[in-house]
Image 1: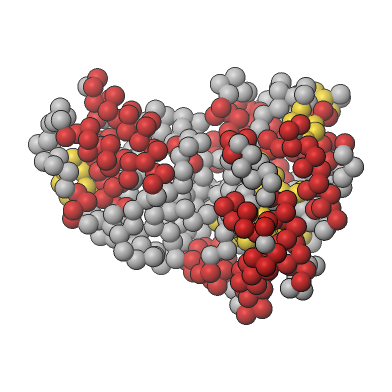
Image 2 (image 1 turned 90 degrees about the vertical axis):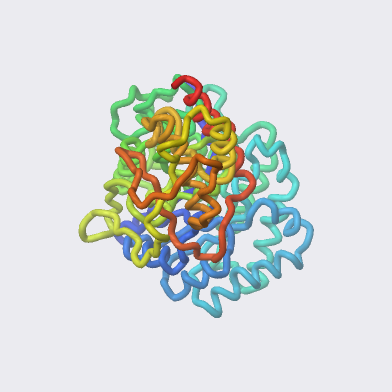
Length: 483
C-alpha cells in the first residue's frame, strides 16, 4: 500500500492537560456572511473549546478573543510571505500590530504565529519556496525583539505531501526529495526555537482522490485490514501518516520535535463520500482515538495535538480542490451543529448551537410554477446564479442530489438570492423566478435563509466562486437535457 497524502487544510487542537481534555478549532472566515466574531467566541466558550487556529490576524476576531483565555494561533497568509521575507522592518511592524498590541492591550492569549499555510503544496509550483523560511526567520526575530520569544512560538502549517515513503510504509518516511534540504533547514530552526512542526493530515482526500483506497482504513473503528510495517501494525491511515513524519524527523536527527496536527477533519457535503454519517464517524473516532492516550505506534502514550478542520462552513472558499471545500464545518454557516458529536467538554455531551443569530426574512426565491424547463433563459440563469452563489450541494451523492430539475433550478436561484441579502432584483430571473414564503426544503436538502450580514451591504461571493460553475451548473444543465 502506498502512502496516502492530503492536499488541503482547517482544525481543532486536542490535548490532555492535567488529565482533562481541552479542544481547539480552526476558525476560517471565507464566507459571504460570516458570523459576528462575538457570537463565534461565545460558541467556542459554551462548547468548551479552549484553543483556536486562525488563518489571518483579523482585528475584530482577535479583539473578540481578548480576555477569554482561549489560546490563539494567528496566521500569516501566503501572499504576505515575500514582504516579510525581504524586510525585517515589515516583520517587526506585523508583529507589533497583530501580536504585541493584542497581547498587551487586549489580553489575547496568542501562543503561536503560523507563517504561511501549506506553502510547499506541489500545486503552487514552487511559488513560496524562496520566501517561507526567510519569513519564518524574520517573524521569529521580530517576536524576540518584542519580548515575546518565549511565550509566542512560530510554526509553518505544512501539507502531508512534504514527506513521502518510497515503499508506502511509515518506516521508509523521509522528506520530499525536491525540498529535502529546505525542510531540514526549517526543522532545525524550529527545533532550535523550541517550536512545533505543524502538519495537516486528511484521510478524506485520500479517499476522494483514489477510488481504490480502502474506506475503512480512513476511520478508527479497527475494521480495516492492518498494514504491517516490520512487525508494527497500522489499523488506520492517520497513525501511518503521522508516524511517516516521525520517521522522517528521526531519520534526520530531530526525532523529539513536537508535532501539531494543524488540520484534520471530514466534510459533510459536495461529494458522495462527504456526508454526515462519515463525518460523524471520523471525527468522533478521532476524538476517541486521541483521548485514549495511546498515541501512535512510534510515539506510544503521547498526547496528540490536533486542530479539527473545521469549526464553521465557509461558502466562499475556492472549490478548486472539490465542491466539498465549503462543507468542512462541525457547525453550519449559522452556527448550528450538523450531527451528534461529543467533545467531552459539555455536560450533555452534545454540541451547543450559536445563540443570538439574526436571520433575514423567511422567504425564498424559486422557479415559477408556470415557467418551462425548456425556456432558453434557464441555462443562462442557472449558470449566472451558480457562478455567483454556492451550488456545491447539488450533484451526485450530495444532500440535494435527489432534487428534480425544477428543484435544482430553484436551489440555484435561492442561493444567489440569499447571498445577495434577499434583494428584490436578485430574484428577477426573466420569467423564471418568484419569491415564496413557503419553505421549499425537502428531505436532506435545506434551502437556506441567510443570516444578517455582519459586514453590512449586499455581499457578492469572491470571483473564485465562479469556478463552482464548471461541475455543478453543468450537472444541472445536463439533467435538464435528459428530463
